[in-house]
Length: 113
Length: 141
Image (cartoon, rainbow over all chains, first blue to last red):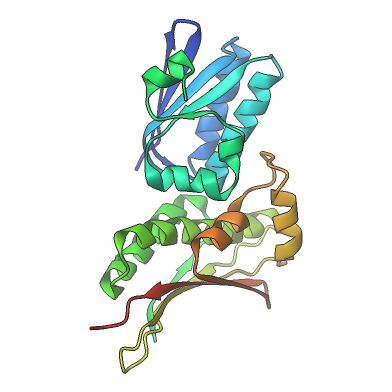
C-alpha cells in the first residue's frame, strides 16, 4: 500500500497525517517531509498514525530522527495511535518512554494522556 | 518441507511483496491473526536487514527466503519457520542489539523487534547471514 502524507495547521501545532505502509522503501518519504516541515519552522508536530497499516524499524528510526530535529528547536513531537499492533512495536522497542502517544488527535492537541 | 522458496533481488521495493507471500503461507498453515502481524513485521525486518547488507556491500546477488511448516507428521504441534539468507558480510547480533539501545535514526531497531516478536530467532553467520524465525503453530486437532 502507498504511503500517504498530509499536513495541516491546528492552532499552534502542525499535524502530519500518515497513512499506508511505512517500511524501508517508503520511510525516506516520511523523513523528507519531516525535514521539510522542521525546516519551514514547524517545530511542534503531531504525527497522526491512525491510518498507518504497517510500521517497521525504519519508520521508527525516522520518527526518532524527527523528534531529535524538533527538540533541537525546543519543539515537540507527539504521536496519535490507538492500534494495538502498532503500539506493541513502540512497547517492544521501549519507545513508549520517548514519545508522548495519544489515542486520539483531540487528546494530542490538548496534550492530555 | 519448504512451502515457498523465493530468491529476491536486493531491491527494497520488493520487501512488501515478500511480506504478502509469507503471511499468505502463514494463514494457510493456521497461524492466527495476531501472530501473523508479529510474523509480518519480524520477516520484514529480517529481509530489510539482508537487503541493506547487500546494498552496503555492493552485492547484487539475490536474497533467499524460505518458508516452511515444521509441523510433525503426527500433528503434535511445532512451528512455522521463515529463513532469510543473504550474501552480505554478516553481523554480530549481540553487538547490533547493544547499538540499537541507543535509539538513533542510524541504528535501526530491527533486531530488537525480531527478538521481541518471534517465538525463536536464530542468527547464523555462514556464507553471509542466515536468520531463521520460528512461530509456534497450534497443534492439529
